[in-house]
Each structure stands twice: as C-alpha cells, then as structure tokens.
Length: 102
Image (cartoon, rainbow, N blue to C red; front, side):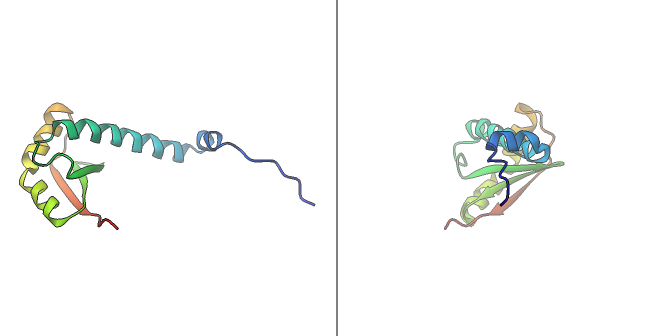
C-alpha cells in the first residue's frame, strides 16, 4: 500500500511554482490595465475588445467579430495615443485577434 502525503492547497502549489505565480501576476496586471483602458477608450469602441497582451511595442487586443475589429482599426491611432500618454506604455502598433464566441 502506498503512503499518501495528502493534498496541498492550490495557493501553496502556486506559491511554490514561480513560473505559474509569475503568469498569474502578469494576467492580473493585464486585467487591471484593460479595466483602466476601457474607461478611457472612445465611447464608440468601449467594450468591443479587450487587451490580451503587450509584446514589445505591440498591444494585442481580442475582438469577437470582424465588425468590432474594423471599428478598433479605425480608432487605432486614438487607442495608441491613450496608451502612450495616459499609461506611459511605448506601443507603436495594435495587433487584433478574432476569438469567435461559441
């Protein structure tokens, strides 16, 4: 018969796994940034997309339809300016990805 060491809590497991805790911390930072960004986006595009990542000088946004992505493209200069001036993030282009709702 095998000896059981018992279960560990998820918080203990996360604390021990540095890469996982780093990933969770990054996700929380992006969510907080997205929440703040949504408040400052032009009303016409607010809520149509969400910030998924920042890779180098590129901000990656997720949209759910082609029409939403087109609207975001029309406002891309405004969005970049908001990110640069209000959040001091040096992004120079937007990358839009479509995620179809199921």
